[in-house]
Length: 156
Image 1 (cartoon, rainbow, N blue to C red):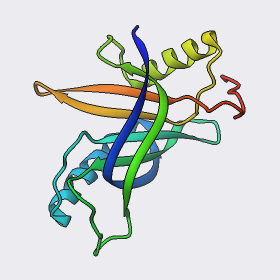
Image 2: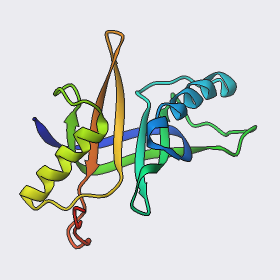
Image 3: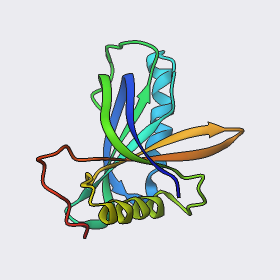
């Protein structure tokens, strides 16, 4: 398992949020792909999404999908999507799922266990960056590190 500490930064992103079953994580990706046609914008980076736990619930989560695009856009015909000029995380524990993990939930558990062992406080929300490589999808998982002074996780 090769964990690294890395930033995660994208400029000009469209966002879309939904509460859903964790098993339905791909549904938002299809919606994000459709918006490029509807709004006439060009994707210029990988789609990624965050998973935010909802009141300790293991089956549901708050998903926010991010689509890096070529330029600033003013969305005319939708209230579901938002434009964000910059997305940035200073420091995150990052793991490439290509390290033989079954899914991003298993990779997230590995990062949580590593953080606990190293006494690194991490956020509850994590990010999955979907990279297309030779027709396959590789998931890079990012778990933001809490800044000093923030409350530590209970790792439950």
